[in-house]
Image (cartoon, rainbow, N blue to C red; front, top):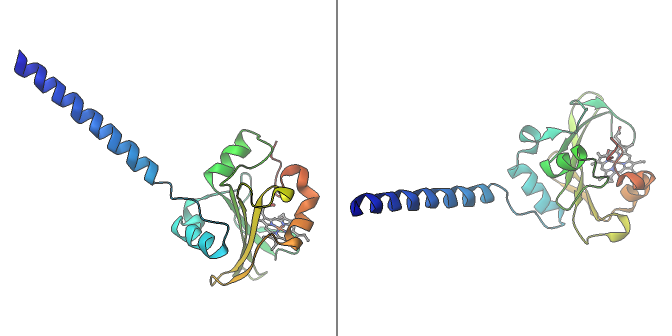
Amino acid sequence: MRVASKKRFAALWITLSIVSVAAAACGSDEPDLPAANAAEVWDFLQAANYQTDWELWPGTTERFVGQEPHGALHTVYANQVSLDAVDSKAGVLPNGAFVIKDNFTPEGVYDVTTIMYKVDGFDPEHNDWFWAMISAAGEVRAEGRIEGCTACHGAQAANDYIWIGPLR
Ligand code: HEC
């Protein structure tokens, strides 16, 4: 009797340990968010394999015909934080949201990536977006609070500076 209950206790203890180890492992699947810095953001995106593992912005296709000044063909990726906000019609994207646009030449050559990354407190006047433009080879062409980006995307300020689709 006493042996049996000891065994049961041991089984429970092992089960609890497995659950807590699994929970810790799940947590570590989500790497820390990068700082508002293009090189760190680029490393984060490469490690996340955004081009293969992230979903396209809802309702869009790969290499759709886009508008100036973003080059001829665009593919727009969103991370899960962004997708959840779109799904719930949140109206704004939260801290940690990424919207990544790969821009292609008319011939379909991958040319440059333009990035919007939401960082709490980074630029309160413009909804805290960190902007970056990075060449296909990983060379940072512009980053930070980029006036050109906020000015044009500012026409969509009521939609959290997002052109591609409504957030509510
Ligand atoms: C003259 C206007 C204009 C400027 C300047 C501009 N964009 Fe855009 N951007 C657009 C439009 C329009 C779209 C919608 C997609 C399309 O082309 O169909 C877009 C889409 C995007 C998207 C996909 C999310 C969305 O809002 O639809 C990202 C990311 C992006 N731009 C980043 C940037 C960055 C970074 C800069 C500055 C380096 C920049 N943009 C400068 C007009 C602009």
